[in-house]
Length: 268
Length: 278
Image 1 (cartoon, helix red, strand yellow):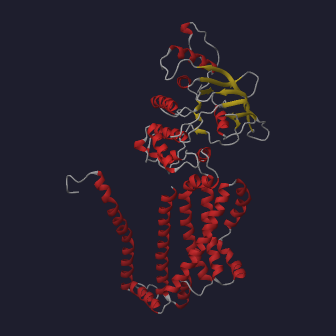
Image 2: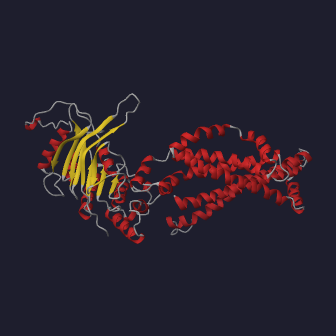
Image 3: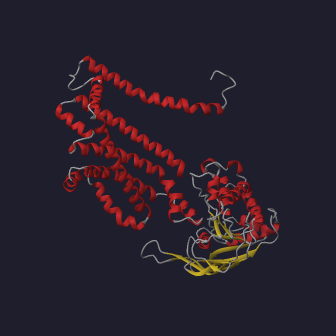
């Protein structure tokens, strides 16, 4: 601030958000740019053969090549579709059962032990059964992803609901709230931060299980692109698939961030 | 603005026991044979040692606990569950942290209040408790005394026939407490509800109440009951330095098992272990 009369508090407040956004964006881009530069340097020095470490340009060209042949977008599209369907079903079931177990003592007694036991089954153990029951179709993959997305949401929501301040609940009850109105007024806003972090974890799990499902049994998708490229020795495509997973994963996480903002305005 | 119609509260041989903590522990009687008739608009202070069931008695009127025996009635209707005619001010403010003061006070409005009328009433109440400037603040941004005032406004938003206050000023510093007492009196003058005030502060009881009742144990009988009842003389606001009240204060304290240390004035010192707080 060079202007002596300017540095009042309101003036700084109005200026801060924009410059902060810029700082965040630039700061976040620093490390990827350094990595890119290091990658380019190592590749052009020829320390490793290009069959093991393709240059950034080769990866870019692999992407352009796939796009021109009409293979890139369908592969991305089917993966995104699987993740979002599986995430939606799994998170919805997790919210629903988490709410039942967290709010009702009866539900807790009845369901919590079983769900707790199922949670300890490593989710990939479901793969053989899902393939026998549901065959190699979309349903088996979406189901596996839904299983992966279910447990983080269920666990965080049920635990958070159990720990809602009983005094607040009682006060709201004393002012005539009960049932859904009580849930919406007290419990939901109280557990909202936990729900959001549960959804974040669930989304990460969903991507994890997507790749697992596609590596094991698929004819399309980013996971399939990885295993197919491994078989054909196309390291450039492997790099491409990993980069795409990173970018799309980050974007989908940002969507949860937007949802969190909206939900905080709406309920909290 | 709707004026509250103060309700008559009648306690008829009210009993309350809680289940024992473990299986072999018998039920624990807390209250027995509590009978009291509270006139509409009357202010009753309920004194008693810690854990004697003062709050339980209040919670029964508020419908948060059910009596094990006997009955409590509001204007002749027996209480079954939470009644729209009662409103509770808890010991802690218990405000929803994600709501502003205004939104918290709005929680107290009876269901079905027309929006415009509700807004006007809330604005008036917030002004009454002196929080207009902080109406859009969240609970964590205001002091404990302010939060307690907001909590009081929330209870008043219900236009209660009976206002139940459970040690509402217990956690406040001494000066804030005195101000809150005066505030409560001016609110009672503006909106004359029946008030049941649980407190462990003898001075507060004498300053605010028309009648003071003391809950305590009688030798050989389980559970607390009314062991002393006195009508406070004079009209409010009372002189905090009144000698007459000082005499009552000594009497109440000794009823609570506290030695008044009056030997210098020729009053016999009683044996006994004082229980703190009171």
